[in-house]
Amino acid sequence: MSEQKIPYKIYLEESEMPKAWYNVRADMKKKPAPLLNPETHEEATLEELSKVFCRELAEQELNTTDAYIEIPEEIRSFYRMFRPAPLVRAYCLEEKLQTPAKIYYKFEGNNTSGSHKLNSAIAQAYYAKKEGLKGVTTETGAGQWGTALSMACSYFDLDCKVYMVKCSYEQKPFRREVMRVYGASVTPSPSTETEVGKKILMEHPGTTGSLGCAISEAVEKATTTEGYRYVLGSVLNMVLLHQTIIGLETKAALDKYGITPDISIGCAGGGSNLGGLISPFVGAQLRGEANYKFIAVEPASCPTLTRGSYVYDYCDTGRVCPLSKMYTLGSGFIPSASHAGGLRYHGMSSVLSELYDQGIMEAVSVKQTEVFAAAEQFARVEGILPAPESSHAIKVAIDEAMKCKETGEEKTIVFGLTGTGYFDMYAYEKFHDGKMDDYAPTDEEIANALKNIPKF
Image (cartoon, rainbow, N blue to C red):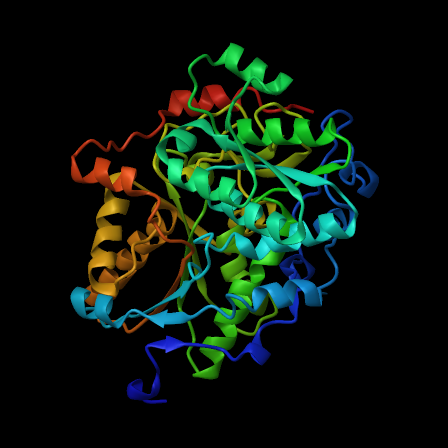
């Protein structure tokens, strides 16, 4: 098909929106290792997980055989408010870079939460309501997940308790207020509301917190409050499953115009948005139908894949969650207060960890100032102010496009633009004023954090 016939934005019809999520584990010959009970170190059972998560979500978490899991009509009805999301050809960026590469981005910012997080938030709230719960607890880093969950809980009339990483709570007050608009209560973490929070504050006085800390608090609150369950915005298999609607739509839109992506890129914190984008393409590759290049981009301040170890570790700082085999920096690792709050997690999705370990996916880490420079370059020509998290993908997409300029190759690059940055102006201010640093942990700091991983 000629270049002129490919539209600036590719939209799917409502009837083309996926009716089922895709479970990439069904096509993986070597499956991700199972979750383990943190006390017995035995494989976690459905009954054990159901004490923390909604039962149907726990079933999805353990499902490694069904390639497709039907999306309930109540969830699809909610999705119709903002899906299918557009796949955009970045013509202006291509022109600015003078690259022969073709650059596309899947834009997930067309909803009030400002990110892809609503895809899983509405699903988890639906299952909580179906189970007859009073409410849910969760953690949030930059605030997109907390915002999305507060919206979903408001829709289903559920109570929502959010533990927000302290540095993000202070850096992003407006994100916090959006959560409160939708009825959520928001607490900076670590806090004195929970026993684990008190313990963390005692061990790390003055800490700016981490996602691992906030997870511990949210799990404790859920398991000690009748009628509540814990929900998570990334890392877990169930969350990655819900986010595959991103990749399914992307693949359908590209297939519609006969476009084959050579490289797929996403930022990686816990792994849900990257996993959601690439899973359908990974599945096609695993089945021998195609061959692609996948790149995970993480901050140099929290280099989980590129400098971590592939071992069983706790998913939270307080060590109350199940053990997961994943690339990790150690559950006690607390990253610097970088501005990509959604990427400040010590571990990585077990699915992505396994794909990376098998060499199916690549990973790079990038410096904070380089990320913001790329974000501004993108914003000035494409007209969207990207979130710091998404800007990691932009940085590497530009890098790959410039490689094409050097070699003359006409590769097709797809990346996930998973959120907008309109609540991140404090970070942009720091960048403009030259007050942003490029801190990266030393080998000694990582080694010390990894000393405390469980040994069995």
